[in-house]
Image 1 (spheres, each protein chain N blue to C red):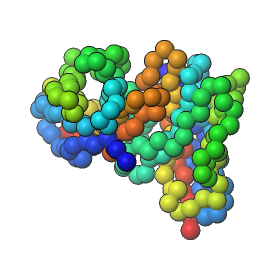
Image 2 (image 1 turned 120 degrees about the vertical axis):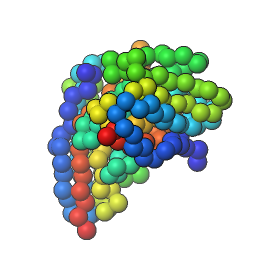
Image 3 (image 1 turned 180 degrees about the horizontal axis):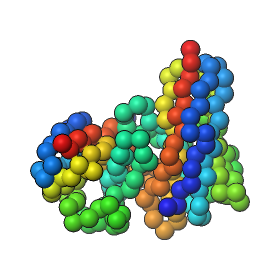
Length: 111
Length: 111
């Protein structure tokens, strides 16, 4: 498998706090993407970071990528109850476009 | 905003029966995918499809599975003789660039 594990597996925070989750992968990649999944629902694309980028922002999301450590982090700032979901990182290699997903981090934001 | 749609949202079938899961990808996308997620597990790649043929398939995608693009809009996944272990959420995805856009999924329950 190309994908490592995300950590933590679960995260519980208070509304307004920041949530940080990490993702590791095993092989060289073209890009890394983060997805959100609400319970029992589909996958929503959040953000994509290319292998030559180190940091990217989108609204309250901040993603970093360290290709030397084969790891990425997703930071959600000023969390809201609606951010409660599972978050997955997914990678694809340069020679194919199928996505390899991590096991995900389940985030619970308490009101 | 265009989106990937899937029908049905939930399918219950008896072991040994054939099922067809349907997807309508985003209209200007050329690359199509099926993934599945067994309850509590990672999202797994099944098959990719481009130019009316399979580009790549995983070891999960055995002779019991087939895909088809019968017309200009639909993309289907057929399981010929379902097994209990086929119970999962099945996601269709499509892309034009790097980002894959996922449908809401079909929950398949095999009894």
